[in-house]
Length: 323
Image (cartoon, rainbow, N blue to C red):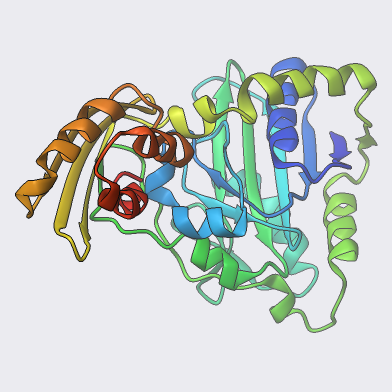
């Protein structure tokens, strides 16, 4: 087995590296990496339905989509990410418990009583420390997961607070679980760096360490530029969904219903309790169709709509109705 420990903490680069290794290598690989604060959604999820959009924008926490399915996770510098890439027989490639077993055994050798859970996760006393997901490519399988060591669990929970009644879609939904940090369960404290090194050496015993070449990195960076850092992949790839929201302002009560396909607003319906806003509602309905369902674009469009002077402050608040 080849062992690779990423020197980058850039999430789209590490996600792109997983795809590159899966598609271009034939050897079994163990890839370990750490990302700066970021949210990683599953391939088949509706990004906006999985995140606390206003919170992550305030905190400047980026969102990226990974290659595998499953639920949304939070990464930071206290979370270690592992990835196994192996070849096998089609139809028998995905084995969550078997693939995660080396990680489970490594944790147990540290005195951590890690158990495999019903949702393909690793648990300590019923609390989640590791979420896992897989992706199959030809006769190869990518299996990756998280290891919460000393992650900021307050930020994690705040990032993933959502309103399930706002969105209507058929996307894969995350199942929230109570989480804990591995560090809290260790009898003998160790640093995150030592923990990462321990996991890497434990898994790659008798293996060879591989360092990405300049050519490898150039190809990976192309994946980043063309896919993993793009709005089209991270947000626009979401399945078709509807967004319904209500907003109460001093001037009136507003309600909206949007239909979004491939990240593009296809239909807009707006109602308000004050008839004097019918013209503004009509302008908004027509102007937003065809736009990316993205805050800055929506705000610029709303600001550009001509209206009465006393509606200027109102328009700024109406952005909340559409995102």
